[in-house]
Length: 71
Image (tube, rainbow, N blue to C red):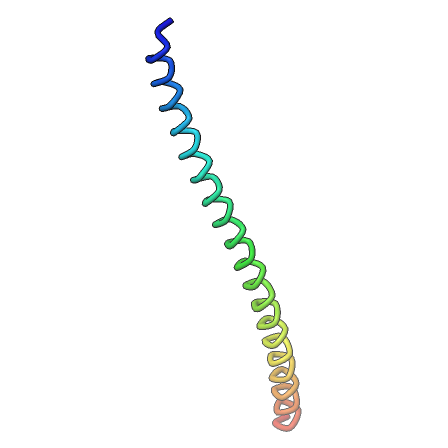
């Protein structure tokens, strides 16, 4: 077996593996950031939906009161 050829292949393979590891690490950080952002979005959206539900209920009661006055 040609040792220099073996070492050449080994070097290329190790470089490729290191590149993949770096990219996977970067991707993992991105996914963690996305999960954190999504959690924040869910919390803000839940607060907004609660606010809207309260507002709609208030408007509904006003409309019912107005309808009763008109009748």
